[in-house]
Image (cartoon, rainbow, N blue to C red; front, side, top):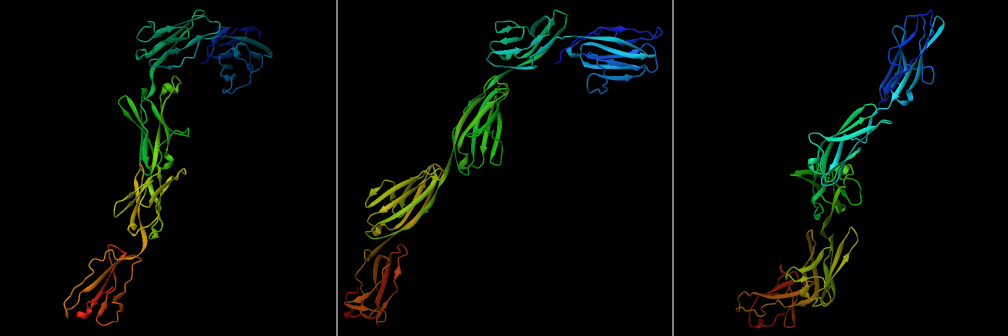
Length: 506
């Protein structure tokens, strides 16, 4: 605020009489004239009698003719009615103090008169914010000071509605210190200043508000989510006034705001504010340390630091079976079943034989079988490969095997087939003797064999091979067992039965 200066305008009269009558006069009686800093200084010059072509002029405090008529700039002059010339200096200051002259020519005789401006320094205030803040439970200071050049200033403090007393408050000429701030200290304080030199006085009314520092009352909990699913982080804080909660992601100073996938919101819960960061559909790049910051006007004014808490968001990727192929080998020979899975964390894997439920986990070394899991720690593409190795295949090893991968997110599986090639056997033959009555229709003679590939059949009577074109015999096409693709059945029908037919068929 510009101080108030007092302009003393001391008229310096050079009176030249034209026939002893016409003279210059001012509209301001005091001369010199005192002004306070900041006061408006306007002086009008005129003649005591009307004279044609008098041509009034103003000269500044450096005795330079003033010609400016633009009111935007100071000083400026303005001609008025009845031969009046206004001088406008604007706000009084030490720069525009001094002697100003008004001149005129009357009947070819110059006359002039001096107007003396004296600027007096005003009582001023500084460092007096109209709103000041204290922090609950901490020392506070209400500031204000008064000054005025050569003035002798006396100051004192008051509180509206109550007095100032007690050991908790210490007054000085430019501050009011509170040792331990409480809510009772909130209110309007009045700072008074009086000049002993010239009686100037003034006051400043300061609103003192008590805030409490922002504090996070419930830490952000560490959380996990699965790719494609939502994740929500919570942060509860309190303070006076209610704190603003901001979220930042590790590696960036930017404050997170609501986007297509992010929703930042707050809820008022009693005296607390609940900050919520919701990610609608998590991706792996969302995995990071997130920081919740609570701040209010107290922290904005640097009276206290903000409060921060951080928590890790861990994003899990469900396992997927990247590759699992069927296996094949010969009886008594080697074979491998290989399964590769991806996921985060790296999945734990196992082979399971579907028919028997036998489980083959990493580290298994039993009955000619070994299981080994090799992990792939490539960032962003974690995975593992599980290999079930057979050193000496048996045809009983054949069948369906399930590769199963499990991590904290989910389970994935795929079924493959292990094919074992082995020579034919008659392990499932069943009856080998068949009966019928002479001259009756003969039943089928049944031959059952296992093998991979599926075996083919030939029938003999004694040492004589039976052909499909032979009379009295009918060889049916082999049938594959629907429950075992490596088991086949062949049937032979004998058309004429007599004692001679009682022989071995094979």
